[in-house]
Image (tube, rainbow, N blue to C red; front, side):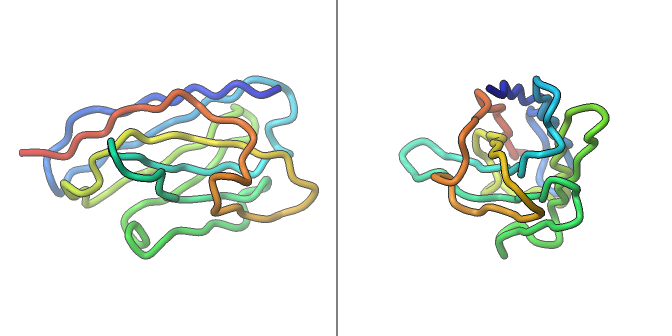
Length: 126
């Protein structure tokens, strides 16, 4: 069982930056592929980023590529999402997710993830 807790959300102006953190419980964090998703009320959850268990592979959709960076610190059981050049359309609740995997891979479908955090609100507005 893995418990995830996001933090770092808030209100930021367009063009600004935020760094989200997701702290995980347990001693096997380094064996989990991690992901970030976001959701706006009334819409489906959207994939934002994924990182392999050793951090060597990352993947982003075109909507955030070049602006968002996912990273992880396995010693601290934490995954991060650095968000730069934020736009109003980035406004959403951001969730981190985890899935045990046997090797180095990324996952982009929400149904592939077994564990989810409660989410943190990010609002981009002037």
